[in-house]
Length: 180
Image (cartoon, rainbow, N blue to C red; front, side, top):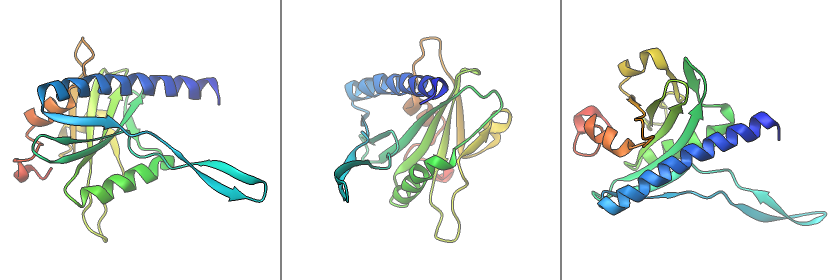
């Protein structure tokens, strides 16, 4: 792995740690229970014998609100100053979230823009077999105009209180007129 790849992994891990800290607060407040989805592997038989094969990774986090609504999201971090688009190598995460959103789960990418010190909640949803939700992407300059993106400034304390942001924006259950 390159130095750039290791640095990217380390930055992503820091962002996931911030999310985990917030999830502990959500549990203490009894607003929701969230956990980190671990990646795994399976044993396969090859001509050379048994070998471990990594499984495709799930989105980073899953959980449930006190109201019973299921939530799944993937945490991403970028240093890009203008835009972000989900890399094709993460297609399986996008497809997984589309599938579970068909069953009323709230699914999204939580994107940290380190340079702008802003987070973006980018909704992933399932329309039907003929109409798929758009491939997750955001242009930072116009994000506030997109009904499927909720931007918020990262406070000085670094807390990523995405649940409070969604509630304030009216995007949680009970706000069906907004489509989330």
